[in-house]
Length: 117
Image 1 (cartoon, one colour):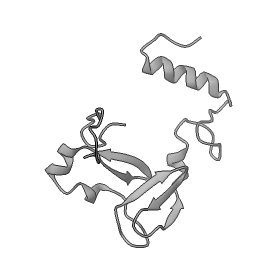
Image 2: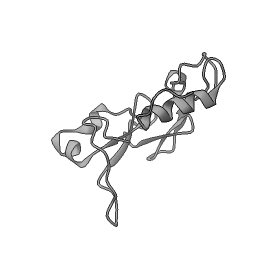
Image 3: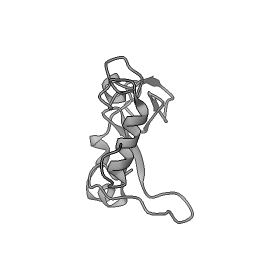
Image 4: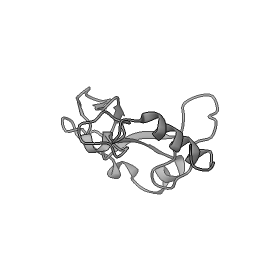
C-alpha cells in the first residue's frame, strides 16, 4: 500500500519499528511515509475517534477501531463496496455475482496483460 499523500511505496523494512505510520481516512486504512510525516501535521487529514478524538485508528474487517480507547464502529458501507456491486452486496461481489471474472480482470491490470478471457 502506498503513502496516501505522495504515493511512495514501502520498501523492505530494517529490523525494529517501521518509520511509516498507519491511520484511517474516509473509513479506509492508509499509510503515511516518513517524508510526509516530516512536512506538516499529517494527523489533521485523518479520521478521529468519535469517543476520544484520537487519530490512532485502524480499519479492519469492516470496522474502525480506536487504538487508544478501544471504541469500535462500522466502516461506511459505501467504502466497503468498491467493486461496483449492488448496494447491500458483500465486499468484492460484482453486479452479476461472478467474482472469478472480476479477479481475473484485476490480475490482468496489475500484471499488465491483455484482457482476461
